[in-house]
Image: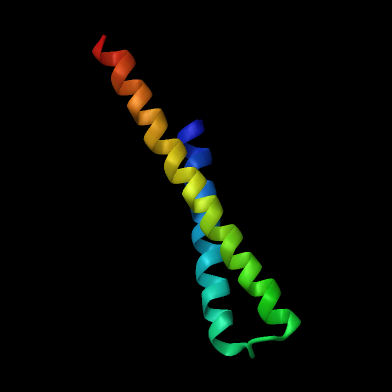
Length: 68
């Protein structure tokens, strides 16, 4: 179950990053829409970073517990 949650979270992060990245190419800097889209891009990157760190820490813990 946790691996499925990680995949879903990573999928959401990828969707947020790709969608907001494409939108940033079409929006005018300085407009409210641009700021909200930039904020969404940052949230997507943060979510992706949290998921990747969580996966790395989980794998390290499993390797350490399995090796003992």
